[in-house]
Image 1: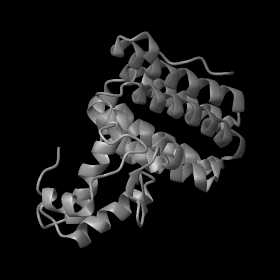
Image 2: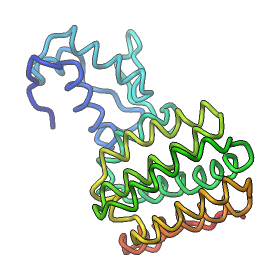
Image 3: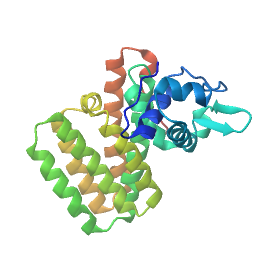
Image 4: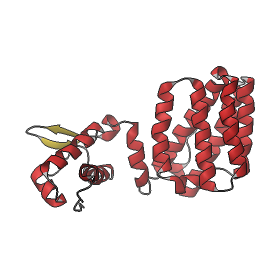
Length: 243
């Protein structure tokens, strides 16, 4: 389960190994990690590096360190934050419903920021959108187009003037980029991607809140439905969202 760690990035590598074991359920909520003496011996690391790694896990809401009680695993769905998404995504092969949930989040967020950009955005904000749409018109690479599409929505979020939304999107983007090969295949046909860029820009420029929301929602729903079909499991189909 655990492998010896090289000297460079010692605490980071310890945290990575333990984090994966916790997120995979090999150390379930309420269980204790092995004592520090045992962990340091199995990992071939000193106690100081191990304690630094455990502090990182505590900061993520994965464990609770208490003197006299050791290091106890937390229920990260109750104690963790959005930053865990980027660590959960590489494990999505065994948790395909995570892809469904990520795409649902993207659909809800994308629809609402499109509406806000149409209501609040300044016309000069669409300059960045047009530049990204122009790049998307010129590429045929699926991964590059997916990345440009994500940047397109980041630019829309910037037009909303909501700092928390931008920080949320930045966190999700880091996780998405680490799992690009699969997610790029869940995008719609390339012509549809480009078409929706232009339609969304037009709606935002006109201040047409309803059309902006509809264009974004229809496009992002298409990706979620494709993910459900690829999964081959009915429970992975996107759940209906309120209008």
